[in-house]
Length: 280
Ligand SMILES: [Zn+2]
Image (cartoon, rainbow, N blue to C red; front, side):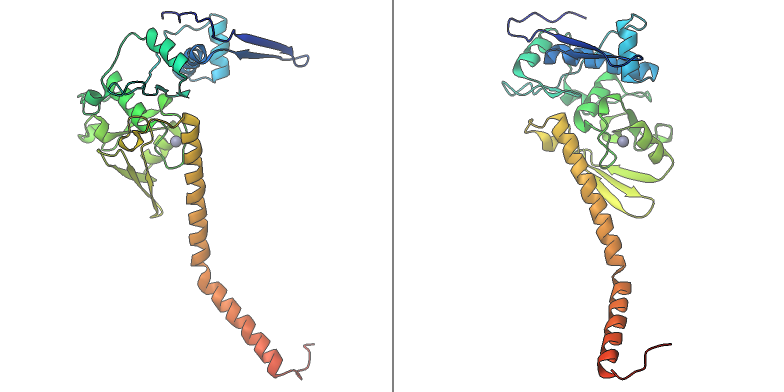
């Protein structure tokens, strides 16, 4: 990988090392956004490839026990001057970080072409996968905020049943939700134009999940950060839980009406018949 060009006004890296107790040492590293984004990608990619935690991946990278040629994907509109530049983990980059990272980028991929690209293979091409990440941004299970970058590509109609490997037949799902979908606890329809996913769950309930990546047609305002997106998804998950709770409450309404009627009847009886002897 080419190294980032130095900039005068880039904050110098800071490193704090603390002997926490007799058994552990704590490291805290602060770097500029462009450098941090590259480190994040490197750690993420090693962790995913070896199926280990990001902390362990970082240790292995620092001690030379792992190497990676880091791939960093940036998303920006080619036809809008000064359009924000997005990174799948960092979100919207500062202008300076975007300039520095774009300055060392080696390849540009046209996402308009990738949006309709096909491959006969089961595994999507890097361009198709990059489009899926840019459209979905997070796992598409309603309310799940796992970043799409490290997730599975799911074929809506299975590849072995004739489902094509193309964005119109694919969404990003985290491993956990991919397994739940595969276990037939849920099924979905994908609107190929909007990227919206309509989920139908085994209990008969349904939910809509809107595509929220910078490539999603409804997200053309290009302003949301990854964190804001995740927060919005969390809020929607909370709204869905509240809706389910309300539904359960409504379903219990007849019992409550009956109980209330019984209570009123008892009160009326007590009012009209004050002379009754107390029970033994
Ligand atoms: Zn998920």
